[in-house]
Image (cartoon, rainbow, N blue to C red; front, top):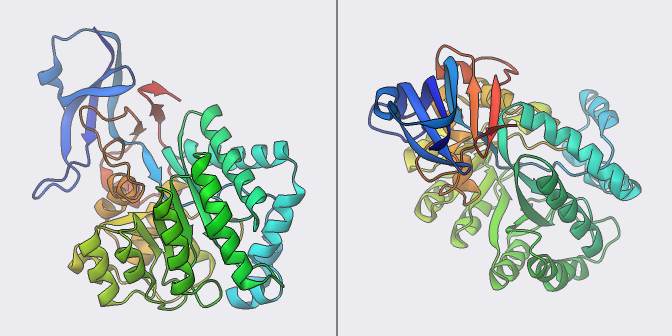
Amino acid sequence: MWDRLLVDCNIATMDARPGDPLGIIANGAIAIEDGRILRVGKRTELAGFRAKEVVALGGAWVTPGLVDCHTHLVFGGTRAAEHAMRRAGASYEELAKAGGGIASTVAATRAASDAELLEQSRRRLKALMAGGCTTVEIKSGYGFDTASELRLLVTAKMLGEQEAVRIVPTLLALHALPAGADREGFIRQATDKLIPEAARRKLATSVDAFCETIAFTPAEVERAFTAARAHGLGVRLHAEQLSNQNGAELAARYKALSADHLEHLDAAGARAMARAGTVAVLLPGAFYALNETKKPPVHMLRDAGVAIAVATDCNPGTSPLLNPQLAMNLACTLFGLSPEEALAGMTINAARALGLAHEVGSIAAGKAADLAVWHIAEPAELGYWVGLMPERRMYGGMDA
């Protein structure tokens, strides 16, 4: 006898087929056993089987639980004052050079007690969960030293242990250079101490870096990637956000899971990503908040055959975005993604960007029963409404 049977629903499985990018099953049913999907198909195909609980969904649409594959969710304080400065004309670079930006969040994060940091972060996580997320990546990066970075990863781990959500921890080892720091010493600390310790304690699954003129050079990033690989960690990269540093090609060379932002990506970078299977993660919240005008080359990514993911980039300074469905809407309205691409971007392609496509991101037998139920007439509404919330969210097959 199955644990749960969902019926009277339409299903976007995200198992793409020719002419059907969402893998739609009308009048479908989903069988759940021990927190995993046992069978999915037409309701008639699952008729006659018994379940401890039969849940009639009233014709609602079921999608995989949303996957937010790029967030900086664990931090202290806010940067609301900088928001006002930016509206007055200050640029990202000007704020950073004036001691604001990431440095101000580092100070606020250090000032917060462990309990305060956990609860502030929990509130943000709860908002993403309420919006349909069942998997959330969380980066460190607001520590600037080994103990502080590990503290952020421990906080992320605690959130995953305490909430009904899958947390994927990423060590953002090279985020920004602290004011007055010795550059070589800082990078050596990250490669020789921070990355090995995070790997030893199993606090991160991958290492990230910010490859940019105001952050770290490709050669410096490569040192971090080399250390990550030596310690069994995957790699990801903030690439081509403000300028083209050929970060996408670097990421591809190291078979990175993803390269993120990509507003200044060129054709060579797109081709390299396609060959490597590196996912392009688009972050429309940052584009919107920074009032940027240079859009990521979506057509180039499509033509090259690069999988496109979408994420909130939830962070205090450049993307204070707490609704995953709004990220899908922005990806459509600002970047020109189709609603189908946006949904794939926060399900199956986001799962690929985290190395979890075998586990989440589509509705298929054997995968985790992480689902979102939407009171909509068609899936295109998920790229249409602004701030839509799911009717219910299931994690491991249970309402959560």
